[in-house]
Amino acid sequence: MKEENLSIEVTIRCTNNCRHCFARAGRDDAPELSLSDALSAVYEAYELGYRRLHLTGGEPFLWRHLYELLDYAAEKGYESCFINTNGSLVTDEAARRLKGYGMEVSLSISVHGPEDLHDDLCGPGSFRAGTRGIRAALNAGVRVTVFTTARRGLLERLPRFAEDVFTDWAGISELVLIQIIRVAGDARDLASDLLRPEDFLQMVRVVAMLNLYGYRISVLENPLATVAAGLMGMPWLTLAPPLYRSGKIVLMADASLTLAHSSRDSLGTYGPGMLGAVTGSEHYQRMVGPDTDICPACMFHEACIEKGLDRPSEWFRDLDDTVPYCRRVLNSIENSI
Image (tube, rainbow, N blue to C red; front, side):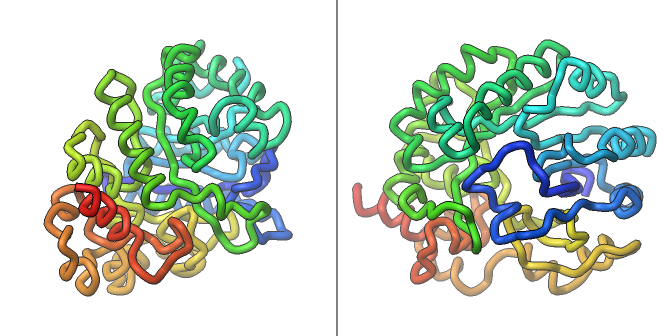
């Protein structure tokens, strides 16, 4: 637990209108987590051994209790808090306040490619608003990671985009790519932008080479990228944990508990004691434990286990559930040799 984050979605309200957003897809309501539930979860998680906090949304800076929760977490003894934001509300004053905490408060700020690609996804003017937030945070000494949705439309421009990111915002700690997915009720049909196996391998090759040349780039919670890079003889990616793993749990804005922010599969509704009850249950352990059916029979099993990929890739990677996405990606490498 000490090495894992307690993740809390505090609101799904947002200042952007991202057409690929899974948090608001298919929803007519806009739930916000109560302060009492947030404080209770932070207290309980600390008692269970968690020392890292992760806040997400929606846009967390729209949640009126944000600083009160940060105050409590710092006083309780949390070592760090990582906040996902689009950057539009990260003013100079907000950045200075975040820097003033005893625990490290860092930001991931979403920039989904060059300005035209970003604004196409998130709305006109959102790129400039977000990049102002990056500069405010960096000027205040706040640690910043840039999060970027990896989609087919970005791949050809990814090398130049990465160069611009590390040149224009020289103080950022890392560029993190998040493989685009579709969820029920999404506002835009993203089928043409999903990464096919050959697209995924193109992304891995580009990211590996950029790392070789000194750019700090990773693929979020997707060890398949590291497995693929190793098999292609390009072992320059950092290890990534799987999306579903022991200790991972998310308290959503509607008070449901789930394994991942992108998942709508509920593990129950939060109440005092629920974090311990869920993470200690046999059902949870089966969900985060190694696969015992599909993976052991796969020819790539040994290579995957070595890199921490002990479960098949989630079916929503490209909406094809006939053959696991990971196997199709790795077969593409095998067939090209």
